[in-house]
Image (cartoon, rainbow, N blue to C red; front, top):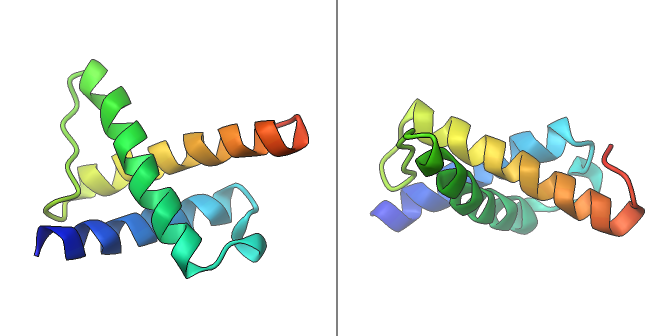
Length: 87
């Protein structure tokens, strides 16, 4: 059940991050989930350095925020690599 929640939270975080970074038109639901889940890992690595615990295995607002921030960072890096600038 934890994996299903992680996919749902990852999808929501990836979708919100793609809306913020103006990438929503070029991404489908699959890539939103991938970006959200990978962004969650990135966000958790960064959050753990600051002592913030945000897990997406069980739904929490902290976990969603950490996944969202990680997804925004990930999309910023992708924009930087693809276009040479962050939107």
